[in-house]
Length: 179
Image (tube, rainbow, N blue to C red; front, side):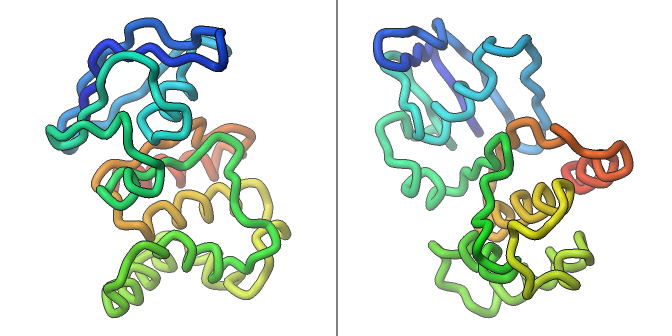
């Protein structure tokens, strides 16, 4: 489903990734483990098109995506939940979820997906009219994941999904990931 072939990514003249290759098959859950600064987030940012690799190739479902813009990559079915959540703090929970479905045109299915999200995370339905910035850290993480799910990704990239969360919330997040 996803393949990285010898990608090297730079921030200006600083090389952050050195010849990274990996393969993710459909249905797999893959974890990147390493020290701070090892390149885990940069790998995800390269896959998402936010920091494109300077060399190498990224294939999604057999097609190259390493030269595409982030919105084109999302449109193909690959979505990232960035480290630090990055929700829209001034938008309501419902508006944040609408943003996740921005590229979609299937209104009936969007409504069904919204109900699915509210079944997964009932607290988001209770807080749907509150600004995202007023949610707790765990609730914001639920919102960030839910916003990504509203794009109906075929592959979901999660950067530090449990960072700063209570153990109970972390367990709930990982249960959802398995689903």
